[in-house]
Length: 312
Picture 1 (cartoon, rainbow, N blue to C red):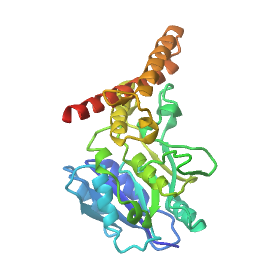
Picture 2 (picture 1 turned 30 degrees about the vertical axis):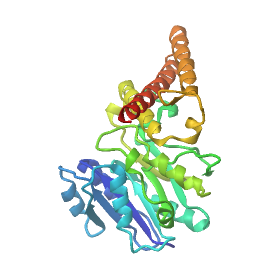
Picture 3 (picture 1 turned 180 degrees about the horizontal axis):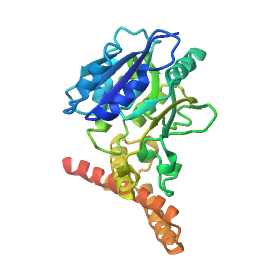
């Protein structure tokens, strides 16, 4: 079995980090003990003391440049001694991994040498705590993920995203395409960032395949703030801003533009306004809110493109 490294970026979440590390060091793993690295990204709370509680099973390093991508990349660099086929996994600092999580990831890589990325489920610790309107359609802002009970593969032809709360890569991936982009990263409590999506799109563009396995499971306590419609509005507005920065081919395909924005996005926004109004008149709150979130995404996209025009 190949060596496994686990990167835990953190910023001022000492309490939840303690639970994360307790779950990671308690993994049922048959191979060499996973090497766990916490990347302290300018925390001012008890993060350093929490890491010390788990030494020497956990190694802590500092990354002074603020941002999730910077922290992840520092974690990757700390595994310089790994071979190209060794595996580096990522988990967030508010996550608890089930005991078989690491073994499930490693087994998936061992079973198929062509796979470069593996990810699994990210579930709410208590699904009953979610309000009725927070259906899986709205799980993106919660950083939850469940692609079902069967294994699935993703590639450039089906570029469905896995998320950084629970994914892993062979080390050779970072040599091939570099690290996570600081241009679209989350900074402190920012929302809607796309560092995971941007990285996977670059990976898929090389012909690589990612594997989703339902038995690699982690869970998280969803903060009350994230279970409000206002948070979701803010997240989708931020998500639109980061997509404007990414300039994905499918969004940029139109030649006709207004303020640097493809016209098909304006047409979709008009459709969403109509859908929003009709749904409100029919009393269909779920459909109305789905249309509203798409409009918030559009507003963030437009604002970022206008800012870009102003910089020229």
